[in-house]
Length: 206
Image (cartoon, rainbow, N blue to C red; front, side):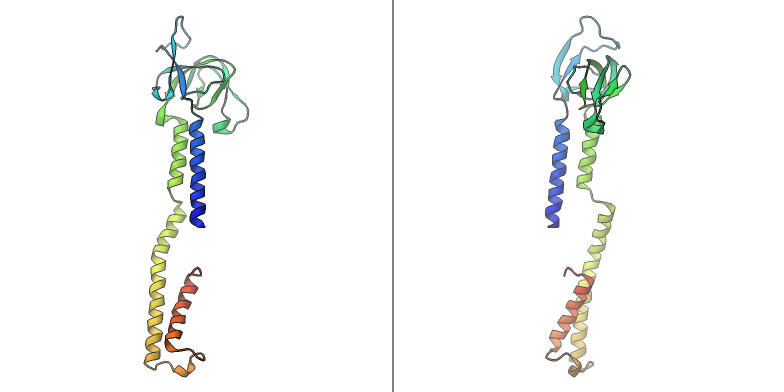
């Protein structure tokens, strides 16, 4: 049951990671490389795969589109829905100089954004990485419990076997009178029950 619950929790975490990745933009409008903060006449834009974007690229984000990567606004004023990442229910106003986060949704006007965090450097990638690490790693208390159980169980088993051997030897040599055993109990049975008692007391799940 414990393993099933653990697998179910990991499956839910995997679904959460998939949902996070689904928030990312698939394509982006890449602008001509231009260091000017304001759009220039004849500026050309082309749609490219968002995975091909590089740090320093300038993209145009239309109303209703997702911001393809982390960056800073060069021009334009709008509001950005960041609820998927921050939980903030209201769109946040953005203007020149403001930072924007990839996978958030632009509302209102168009924005020209210079990308600063793409690929593994983006906030979204860092969130996914943290979730994956949390999924695959153990809590410190769990690691401590594993180390203790790794030594505790063999010690209990050895103590149980020693108890069995000690009682069997004691009864066989007559050091403990047989007439003092419970009625109908043979030396082997009594020794075995004593060993089992050690297991049950030390490990109730035994």
